[in-house]
Length: 352
Image 1 (cartoon, rainbow, N blue to C red):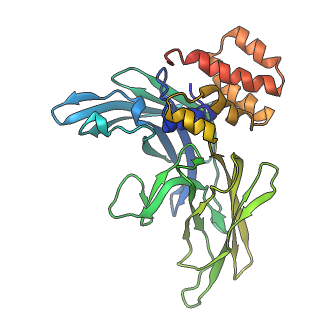
Image 2: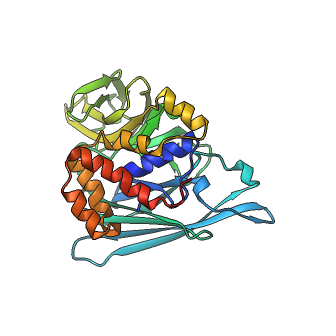
Image 3: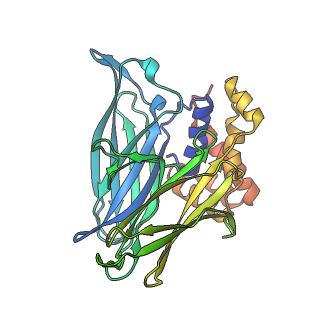
């Protein structure tokens, strides 16, 4: 199993030139939106490195075949599963670029509630697979007061030229399922939807958007110009992007706060993201093909709280040996950081 923070480190390593090969890392995220008349729906975002898949030559070039299996389980209920068979085609394997990601979206319509989401991706050719486990909350969205969807992070947002898997409300929103931004992806794109705006077509009225970034203690570290927009109707799209490359590497939260200027109603949502900026030494090492996997994973784990470290290991216990569980449970925070780095290194048996 590859969990989010490990996927972060390995994805960045691949971007900088080193390629993990023993398992298939993937990143997964989700966001809850609303459809008028039918209630909430969930978008699950999945991505993996293109170079981690095995391509086979055929008459039209080279093709990789893989499948995505989602399992959604509520407490005391039988799990619901969904499998999709996918493929990626290139004219030549030279078109497969290090760091390039294959992204996919799966849309679900579960009842409001708490779920465990298991997402597995398997390469049909090589047999390599990756797995991601997380809890998922599907909130019942209000129908009679100001409401906002979850925030979705994007690697790119642009006007949709044609309908595609990533199209919605006239935009093409390419998901960033890892919630990681870096010097190669310095703009933090976001997308959300606003519902139940008081609206009178005979009157011109507005709403105000405040967007800011906080640290893990809730302190504001960066704020952006307040934006006032005319209401297009009872719902609106919130889409934008902020360049965050001036911030230091760390864990942050994007906060979007909406105020209806007519009624004074307010609502806000937050979403965690990560900013990674390698040092000059790491960049040089990567360019020379000697990126230090341990250092780069440690750079992420060291920024997690002990509770977050425990959460990561708890999701991986099903592949941990009994003696590893006993060792981990007796460690302090610094020891847990080192343990998690070594835990995944032991499972990367094909690293050169």
